[in-house]
View 1 (cartoon, rainbow, N blue to C red):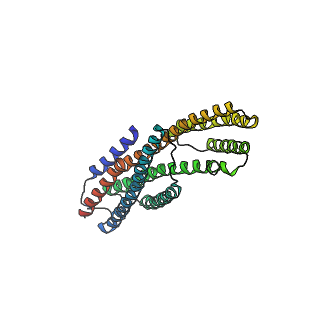
View 2: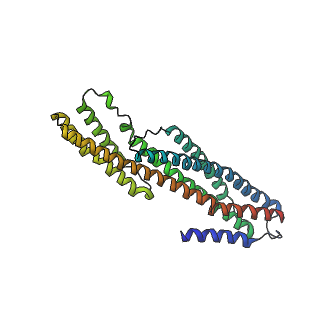
View 3: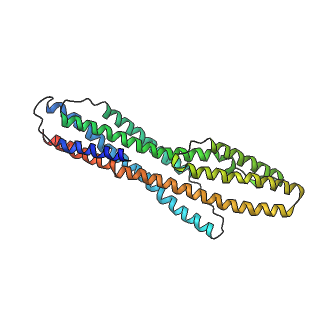
Length: 289
C-alpha cells in the first residue's frame, strides 16, 4: 500500500515539476503536438470507459444491498427467501466490462508504443500515461476476477440448482440424488480459484454445506426403516444448517460489494488523480507551443 501511494505522489510530482516550458530545442512543435494529442485522446476515451465501469459497480452495490436487506429480514422472521435469478443480467454486465478491458488494453498499447522525444517534460508525460493505463487495466481486471468467481460458483452449483424433489416418486431416491448433487457441488467448489480476500468465508461456506451429507445419510436411513424420530431430528438439523449457509451467502455477497467499492476507490483516487494531472499537463504543454 505504501509503495502504491508513493508511486502516485511521484507520478504527480513529475508532472507538476515539469511545468509548461516553451519547447525551444530538439523536436519541433509539429513533431510533439501529435504525440500529446494522441495521449490526450486516449485519456479522454478512458473517461468514458471509467464512467461505464462505475455504472457497473453502482448496479452491483445498489441492487445487491436491496436484496440483502430482504434476505436478512426473511431470516429474522423465519421465512423462506426466494430471490430471483439475475444470471443473465450479471452475464451482460460481465460482457460490458470485458469490452471495457479490451479497449483499455488497446489504449495502453498505444501509450506503450510512444517513443521518447528527448524533451524531459514530454517524456515524463508519456511515462505517466503508460503508468495510468497500467493502473486502469489492473483495476478493471481485479473487478473481472469477481465476475469470474461468480460464474465458476454458478457452474459448480448448476446440478443442485436443477434438483427437483417432486420429480422423484420415491423419497429415498430423492434423498440419494440430493446427496450426490451436494457432494458434486462442494467438490467442484473446492477446485475454484477463489480470490484471496474471500477465501476464508468461501471455505466456511463449503464446510457448512458438506454438513448436509451426514444429515442426508441419516435421513436416507430413516426413510428406509421408517424411523419418524430420526427423520424429525434430521429435518431440524437441516433447518439449522440452512441458516448457517444463508449467513455465509450474505457474508460472501458483502465481500463482493467491498471489493467493488475498493475498485471504485482506486478509480476515483490514485487513477483519477493521475488522469486529471495528465489532462492538465498536456493542456499546458500544448498551450506553450
